Length: 498
Image (cartoon, rainbow, N blue to C red; front, top):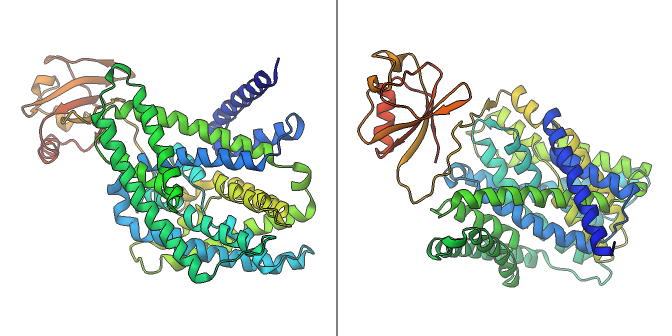
């Protein structure tokens, strides 16, 4: 076997083990990403030698582009619109406040345990950990199939999808401040640079998103529909790289591009969604496996690293994150105390802090290895403590409800204007008779399929209905007319399938 074939074999085995670990994680309620990370660490410790921080940074960049775009594409703007102000506040002021609090703690605690750091280095370490991780938040919240009241899920996803630019800017500025070359940037210059990056990122992200929608809807490649996915993937990487080229923040641009694409009419939406769902999981698996391979367990398990990493993790979870959240959300009175407490708890750290922690090493900073290992330990601590208790905390605080999954998995093209609904048959609905023709259904409305006991069949007028049946209803009526019809029939269990 040549080298290339060996590499392919190793990665195939890693993916096999990662998928098995993901299934095991779902069974026992643990975050799948945590086990992917564990698989990488085990293989890196015993079987594979991998120490390329540059390659890890590159893989992280590619993976985060896919993860952020997919997260934006799956987010409805109508859901995040009510929580834009608190989300943006957490993503900007919250990140800076977290960095300052954690930096001060690291500065004093490191001296106490005999690992004294200068304040700029302590602040740099804190900056790399100051943002919540989009990969972890998106993956855990969506895989739990658990609804959250008070618009908490879109708020947490908006924060994690948009707070990387602030953490990135803080990291880059502080790396320059403590690097060997001694380069530094004024506070005013840093603020101006941050504002430019945000403005350019938002503008280009929106513009490229509109270009992507226009191109996909207008280009005619129906003879090979798979190329639509390739075209959209090209727009994802173009959004990131072109924005960076023009001094904007590529990660923010990619997330906004995903929001624009996901909230506009799109041909072949079902195929595109399926493609990016699978590709996002692949990106997450490869990213966390690579990070796991990179870590040196001999260094990580040193007593001082363990002590400092766990101390930082505990301070971040119990002090810095809650203090930041309660301060930032103080002007927003519609959140209950329980909601604020839950937002504080879901401050998950993951791949992004570890990727940012590679910058000091690549720039040759003396404490670069120490920063990386402490960030890795703090992130691992966060995934173990917070990641495994996301659902339990929501239930304990009374903020969770069970999301209903539709039985009819219908891929509906955006070009079809009809309403598709799934409804549950009730006794009130059958008061005038138990056959389909006895139900007072409006014109231009059809029951096209019935689900009963795990079986599916197409009904006729004389088909007898039973309480508990699920009906797939297609109608050309407006939303208001359908709501009125369902209300008249005593139907409250309605799921919109579009």
